[in-house]
Image (cartoon, rainbow, N blue to C red; front, side):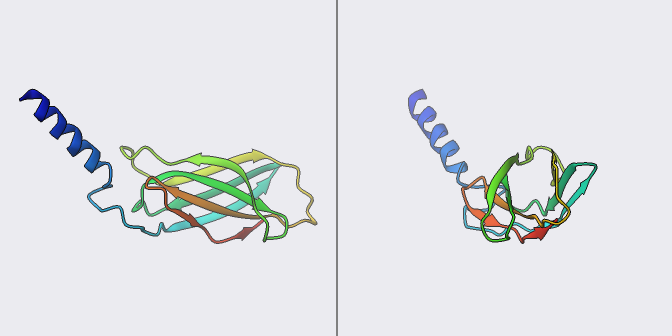
Length: 123
């Protein structure tokens, strides 16, 4: 009898993995706000926030010199769901040439594997 209870308990746990915050595993769009990039004293700071409605596994910070071909320069992990706040930051040392434009975007990877690109911003 204990074996049946154990199997039932494991089945419930597995099924619960397909739900997040009481919602089913359907694709949802994340709302990325306050997405900015600043360079000061050879330090690049990229900041953004989310609405917290979609569970985040991680972000890929991507950059481009032409606004078309992007490469991933960093990974930023999602917040612990037990903590409040959905503010993110990526900071790096850079040497920029003021004559060149640099473009950034974020690739959001949700905990269910869905991917979504942010808008493109320019530094």
